[in-house]
Image (cartoon, rainbow, N blue to C red; front, top):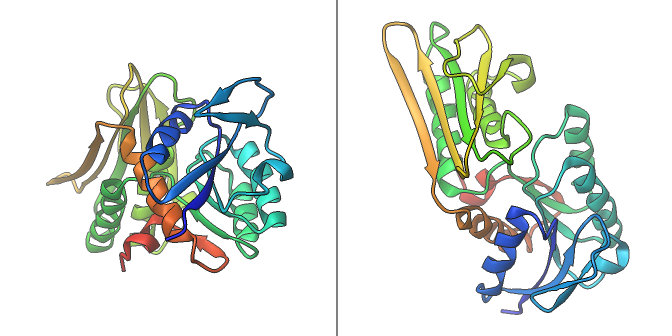
Length: 258
């Protein structure tokens, strides 16, 4: 099999650094482009850093992007023009930005996931099943913990789990989002889905969904111990996406969850 020419945007970030490390030991990829949003005169893995431009992505087959929403949309504009595939791990998009991503996917294949872990995507699937199975007497809430450097909250994964709850009820996530708490020891259930985010230390990621009808409580959770979990998942997604037609895909498509 011919190696896939890979570009990593946000290469100096935590995930960018992990992706470089994982890609160098993955026989399916040839790392050819590294980009950042400012000019830095240095090389990483023998590759000179570039800005996000047409020229930077010209010789790549696929771009893996873990940056910020504004940067992701700039990359999608370039990728759409050059007909390049994109794996998006960026989180924190608004509804308007989500709609823009969907419009780009009509021209190029895009796989977007708030979390690239197999376990987390299985958790989302189980969350949807639980939500669908439980009646309206059961209230739900989502709890997550990440390292102190993470700025957005709730995390993209927490919102994925919220979407699992909403999908189980055949409702729109945004119509069910309740209060968003930060660093609360305890937080309440509500008629909508409440979220609580803890930011401390160097924790990679913990997520928990809880359902209750005050007579019983059901908990579904996941804990990550190694950031390579996400980079390996992103590379698996990139390999899978390389043969797909234009469209907006998720890890659920890759894992073939029905």
